Figure 1: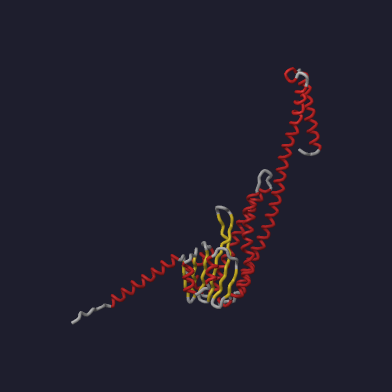
Figure 2: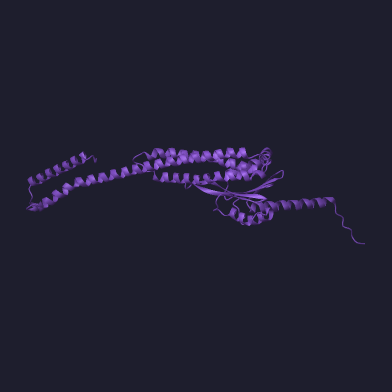
Length: 336
């Protein structure tokens, strides 16, 4: 007789649990390797990828069948804002501002979004506060997931954009504070503010390069994203456009103010330079009589060794007269 192997139900259940745990660990390890976080509510999945690597290309191609050129553009840091419309999804490239505290200069950071019927994939090279905050809210709160993820991927993307645009008002406040600080420096005669003005002007230009193209982008995006959102996004995007237009108008005002500060600093710098030149010219003019009289004194019979005290006093009086005449001439010309 052959031995009969008997398996208890507990053995089968235990092996299934171990396999499930191993699969979960493998998926977690893969997500960490791809710098990826996922969140699912209903039939919508949000995938957020920070600092995407080349391994992301394979994952996105196999999972979502995105076009290779779109994935290449998403990984490239030097792309212009644009929208690519496909039957299955939208591919959108945005620019947002990132402030470097070391150089005190803002730079443009690109982030991309793939919008589909049942998914939203966001990719960005650095942590973006608008994306991180919304993802964290949905991750810890069932109510937040129901609020933001139950209306479709298009509505979820709108919420990200809304937070991103609202964050720009804090940037405008920082620029305004810097302008107020520089205003006190510009009109001080003894202080030069050229460097501070240049840094602030560069920051404003960067913000303009980010926000002005966004107006056109949002106008096109609202029309093409209707199929991925349950509510009508027209009113939502209208409010978003109002905020963007207000930001652009404020940046225009800041540019005009900075130009006024720059002109004022240039004029005051020229005034300081002219005053310095006048002072040096005055010193040279006052020293001229000494040179002339000293030359004549050396040419007198007997030279400086046999010269009399009377002659020295006469020459000294001549020097004083010449200096007084020079000062009177400069005074009448209002040169000092």
